[in-house]
Length: 118
Image 1 (spheres, rainbow, N blue to C red):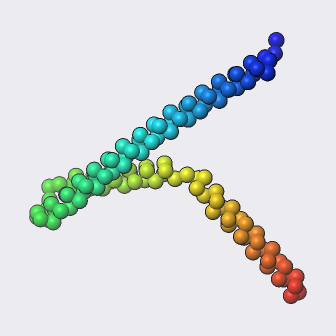
Image 2: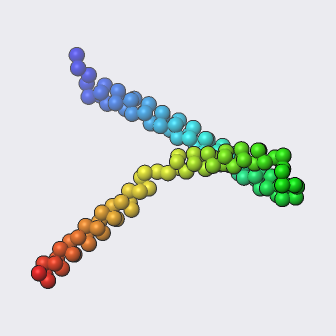
Image 3: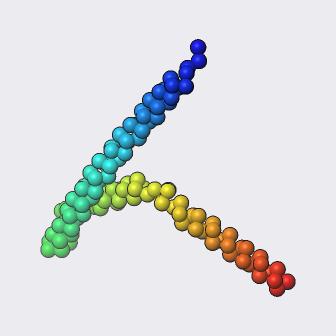
């Protein structure tokens, strides 16, 4: 027996609700990860500043140079991680359509001018 419209609606609604809940959970997890990464980035940048300041006051062969190098590598990874996950392709949607619009307008104006001259 085929499902009635009401049963189909309930099934579709339940599936959609589950998808929304999953996306919300993923968004919350990503938000938490971004916050943790930003805090860790701030901590590492502060630590790097402190080590660089200490290195200037110490001899050239500072024993914490390895830690400074490790911190800078971690900072690079965190910055890349934050940039890649915060970048949204939807943010390019408006500039893309503006380029398409004005390029098309430029082509049409050029075509009209060529027809008027030629």
